[in-house]
Length: 295
Image 1: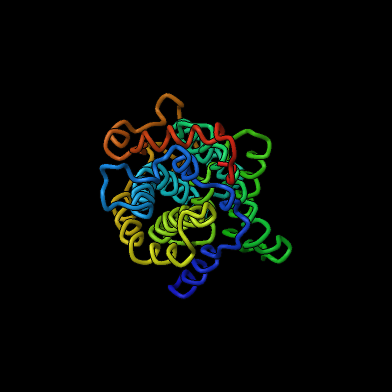
Image 2 (image 1 turned 90 degrees about the horizontal axis):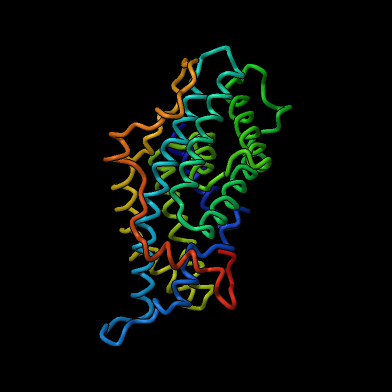
């Protein structure tokens, strides 16, 4: 994919009107505000509500990058293996890819510590697959028979979405994002960076809806204050992977469940939650007497 094609896809994916359901989630910001953390303490002289909001965004971006980007990385790798595969055993390729994506999904379910975040992640994840099937993919009838790559991608997305609908797997956002962007042919670097940018943008959008800041201030923060945070976290976490041993092209042996994890990778590079306070407050979202957001 050349740079112009990739730029065009990036523009499509960054469109705020995409039906992904992100507008109903505040990623813990509403609960954070309700519990008084957006109001500076008396001893914090010179600190205002905007500075408290920036602190939240910084912490949220840091923990989300550390926990989600490894899953984006590995999900994209699964898709790339399907695209590059040369085996004529089509059903075998599909089964192994779905097995690997399900394993990533199960691990993210375990790594997400509260039910509110899980609920939002699964809702947005399946919306991304639906977006690809209904909005980005070509109609099956118009795909040439010799275009094996496109047939494989469409089959993988459809089967994975069906598994989610049947509740055979979870369909978490980072895994589905990796499937979507891998299917569209984006580079890993661009996919991870855009994923973090959209997370930051959704936080500021939630802050505007909560009347914490105005729309002009939101854009100003996104350009001048949040931009270096996104760049920094994308760079620091771009190399991370989950530690799961996904199937490689040409492999036909089953991976034993007891040996799916690479312990060395888990110790040094595996996903992690780095902001316990944010997790606790996000988990208390449903306890608020009145709420604007679902999560």
